[in-house]
Image (cartoon, rainbow, N blue to C red; front, side):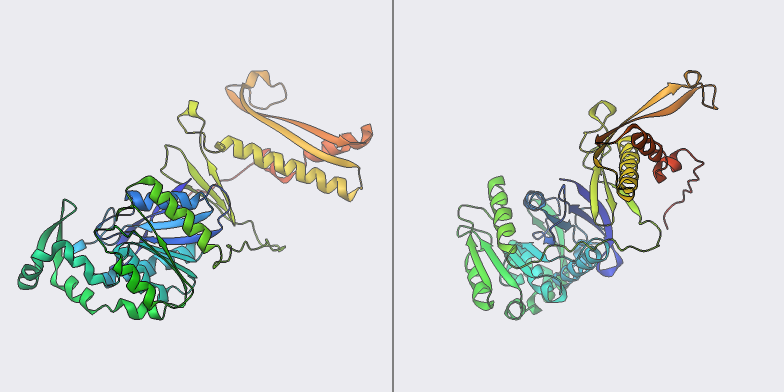
Amino acid sequence: MPTERFQFTGEGGHQLAAALDLPDGQVAAYALFAHCFTCGKDVLAAKRIATALAAKGIAVLRFDFTGLGSSEGDFANSTFSSNVADLVHAADHLRETRGAPSILIGHSLGGAAILAAADQIPDAKAVVTIAAPSDPAHVTHLFKDRIEDIRTHGQVEVQLAGRPFNIKREFLDDIAERGLMAHVARLHKALLIMHSPTDDTVGIDNATNIFLAAKHPKSFVSLSGADHLLSDKRDAGYVADVIAAWAERYIEPVAIAPVAATTEGPRNVVVRETRNSKFQQTVTSGPHQMLADEPVAAGGADTGPGPYDFLLSGLGACTSMTMRMYADRKSLPVERITVTLKHNKIHAEDCAECETREGMLDQIDRVIAIEGALDADQRKRLMEIADKCPVHRTLTSEVRILTREAD
């Protein structure tokens, strides 16, 4: 599955590092994922769930909260409320650049943050919590022996999962003031609660509290045998399977806007690195998305057509379409047109009709098969029409390419 990596502006103006896991084909829905406390977007559970959902057609945006992973800002200055605000900014960015998130997914404290943010993301129709606490203050048990020091000194370094983090008094005050159950009670969205009965980090009673506070439609799925971080790959895959099947009832597929028949200019084509391999790119044109890559022999992973493959595809498609338009207009009995193309470099001296006499030239071999009961004159005229396709004319005329750096 292709993954796009980029940044967007979060709460406080910081640039937050994000990853959008995309299906190989059409996107059925967009989801926003919130990871666990002090984790990052690339924690195994988040990556595995996002990848598995992408394989089912659901694109997933995951990102590092302020001060975590590759995101800007100081973690010590972040709070539960700022995390909630970051989620709303992420949803806004996704809505503006791709499509509104119809599914919200939160793991551990990220689940609590998703519940708190849900009413500020109106497009979302389905909410999923995984091992989420019913009270954000639950996270303080991770450093309960330092709470008094934090309140006394204002800021203390604590060890969480073997890493040092600075926790401020403001963080404690913020989570103490968050009444999460009030958010759950007025959720007005479908809710799926997933929790392991043997979770020794966030007890199963938290799932009970959330379930009782929520209105229908609500569902509970037991993650029997799973640990809090879903460290077993099979558990993450199971979570993704359940989410995809459950959410289908509540969400509508991403609408693909029809291309209007107007005289407006051509739409933009956007090519962006995925960073999954050396050369892999996503190619987006309106609602359509493809992968581009180089063959293995050229240092790529061969996950998509190469640049010249796309060039030949454009010429081949234009050739066939132009011939089809002519055949239909003249009522010719053309059943099918097949265009086969190949690009090569040739020596200029081998091309008698070419103006260039030295060095190498680009040559495109185009072979056209026309199926149908046509006579010789009809076939000759169709072959003449092939050279009149707009892309052919572009490639054989003077082309001006203007290049500038993006603002």
